[in-house]
Amino acid sequence: MTKMKIGFRTLKTAVGVSISILLAQLLQLEYYSAAGILTLLCIQKSRKQSTQAVVSRLFACLSSLLFSSLLFAIIGYHPYSFLVYLLLFIPFCVRFRMQEGIASSSVIVMHVYMHRGIEPAFFLNEFLVIVIGLGVALLVNWYMPSIDKELNRRKEEVDRLISVILKEMAAYLKEGYTLWDGKELLQLGDELQQAKRLAVLDAENNLLRKTNSYESYFDTKRQQYEILERMLPYISRISVKMDQGIRIGDFILEVSSLKPGSSTAHLRETLRAIREYHKLLPLPETRHEFENRASLYAVANELERFIHTM
Image (cartoon, rainbow, N blue to C red; front, side):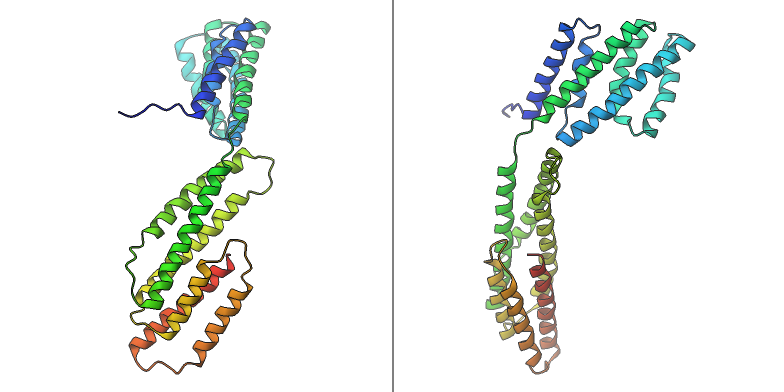
């Protein structure tokens, strides 16, 4: 049996809806329960999304309040009035990018239809219902728990997987065989996808921060992942153990042990020396030797790109 779990967003929604209804009821507003509905519709995953939702719904609700009041006063309070209203109001919302506020504004329109009249007191009542519902949603959603711990854990896991992949590549070049099944490469792709999602969420929860180091970090790791994907076929084509391959294998092993943020100047110099050594070698005598050395040359090119991302 699956254990029921109450998430943080669910808890915020329940608290926010209760506060909205309580405030509207204390002010003795008519249709006070609608404040809770507006809050319910505005709870989002991040501060940025919540702010956008509140702004969009605020304009949609106020527009619908004025538009429906005038329309119903002209054509009457009849069921078919909703047909005319929606045919006109939905394109209006889409035109001004307020379509996510259509459902919220419909709550206000129902009040207009049931009230059947244009009065200052009614407009004030609806305005307060809107402000309370959307305002509480914004305030409740402004608190977001820190996900730095989870992001740092993902950073460590991504670095570990990249190191394992590099070490397995180095082992193949140095020993001529490996029992590696490549699962870490698949895990790395999944890990980066989830980490990127969390990094974007972190950026949306920190609107005042100009740059997001996590997002930038995982973008860089994504580039490294793509380089490793390109390197793997070249390495797998190398069918014999060669001195050049051992040298590149030792170099890859050195890259795998480098800590993030460390200087890469010595790696550039080492790779340059390896390339110079390859230039001094005699030309390949067979097609097989040529293909193996061509694959090593392609691996060296990808390694140079990899170092540039570090």
